[in-house]
Length: 485
Ligand SMILES: NC(=O)c1ccc[n+]([C@@H]2O[C@H](COP(=O)([O-])OP(=O)(O)OC[C@H]3O[C@@H](n4cnc5c(N)ncnc54)[C@H](O)[C@@H]3O)[C@@H](O)[C@H]2O)c1
Ligand SMILES: C[N+](C)(C)CC=O
Image (cartoon, rainbow, N blue to C red):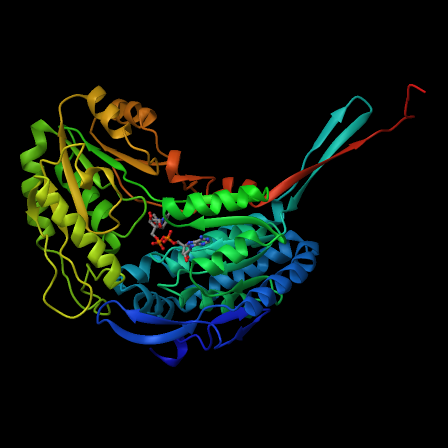
């Protein structure tokens, strides 16, 4: 890694890097080679304490600043991020293994979008005036206090800003714990926020596994927890937060349906299925991994899909021509390999891929199964890797019922030239982030999040403000107070 991109210590607390090598060592593995490229240490209780007390102290002062002043810090951070996009994208690639071709356009840029958007909103966060005869009520939009953000490993820069930007815009402070698999990127976000003028302690980063996350979640000084992770972790964190009446946002997993009707534009539908299954080597929460294709178009769809998937450029993620990289870790690669074996064993037809590449690093081929049925494991469980399950269907009512027959509800997509049908079907699919004739777009202006087991709350858009602030209502009596005795 170049000097410019290398964080200089494990944690970022109270406006500066902090090391405490007493914490367990966490190796940072470059997924394209399997080599250890850095090492951080899990936060000791002393580091967690330092981060939380810094956040408590900083939050009061930060909340007293005007929204405009807070917003300026965020928009300055966005500008710095854009100026350093290449270095930050390279770091994202070192951390995750995602191809530079992707990280240059999807990670620091999306993080900067969030900083810019919430920076822009900060000055106009207000309460309201409610006239009640001569008396009146006014509401104050107040911050929650100290918020904890906990990240998954697939989008480390983006996740830290999707949580940090709205939290800070509302006057909260944050302690962010990245995934132990990708610990580097959030440190640079913290560094940039300091450079942009964020007071020390407003955004802190501590490393560690679930135990460190758990320490943060249960601390009584923490008012809110926002987790991006798997459903099992979400259940634990939600339960722990609920026991202390904390606010939560839960961005969890999915097994989302992508429905392709006979009348769809074939090339666009295949593009949607590719984007919705193989971007980031399939490690995207909202992926449309159950691709329901209407019988009339099925064979043409599969033929074109297999042809295009075979042209993926798999290789060195730092080579900008590469458009398909390794899995994030050996562990994740092995999980996905087991699902591929299950798919074959349960009778699905392998149309493309299915194998590990014979090279160093954690590379699997983009894999497509056809003739998948609803009860197969690969159609029911989140795989979080490059495995697409293609199922066929006959009628609209049938596909809606089957698409909804899942515990998850993160995303859903429909490809059709019949726009009335597109809107009708999307209206009936139980999912939070949906697409018509597209898949996986996630602009900061749109609310993002799931229903059912896929999550609680929304990130991005004005909706996120509701999740990082609370209303205080103040009744103002203009006349005398009447009392019964
Ligand atoms: N909905 C979304 O926006 C979204 C985005 C990205 C990833 N995801 C989901 O994330 C999952 C993959 O990421 P992962 O493997 O890192 O998930 P994970 O659940 O294993 O870990 C997520 C984070 O939670 C922490 N953690 C684990 N146990 C904890 C505990 N008891 N208390 C507090 N923190 C704890 C981990 O250290 C990590 O930082 C997939 O299910 C994917 O769908 C969801
Ligand atoms: C939010 N998104 C879809 C970009 C990444 C989720 O894994």
